[in-house]
Image (cartoon, rainbow, N blue to C red; front, side):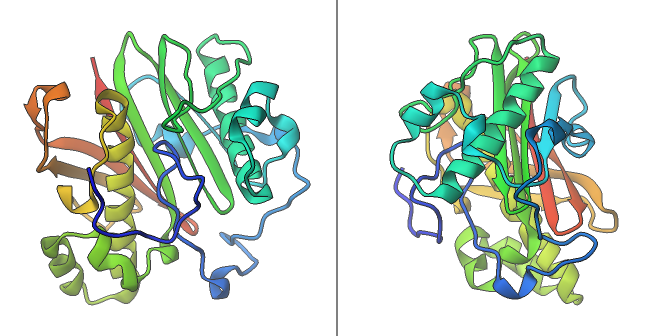
Length: 270
């Protein structure tokens, strides 16, 4: 498909990474829930992610890392496949791959290389589906067996980065009208970020099966409630995808808010 707009993003972006939004300088503060990260934190602090697990009601493995990655964590085939990219991109890529390897270990896989495919998705083991996402201060990965899942998609965003100047690009008219009806500015911002992130998670999930690009306006999101820091949402895709048997049904997913981030997840079980 052809996109009708272009968000600010890394030129090295890929379908399983999500479209990149900048973090405003004024929000890079220190303190609880802040975005300040320690570049020296070691790879051993990659851990099972309770946050990502709560996005799903099915059996899968999830890992996270809340610091800066290191190029030293990459396996040779992964580094060579990246080509010439920025140091920031290498560190993000390395953190995401390290989380994916940690999660794969929970499924009994050894430390396999996960080089990018031509469309930039990770080359997962043949019996695994997975998704990787990262933003400032957080990297995470979710993997599942192909015996139980056809596809999974996750996304993490810094909520304040989904600024009002991009809402018309990433939200449908109805979604923008819902935002206008929310009186509290913080709740409005959170709603926008969740909608954007939910579309990203859905996009990654469906792309595993269709290898088709979708526009933000091709997907409509309805959030059940914003009264809690976690909840559910539904998505409906207006594009017919023959790979999934025609017009998409309503898809369900979950979101979570934690510190400066919003997390979303979508899965398609067997």
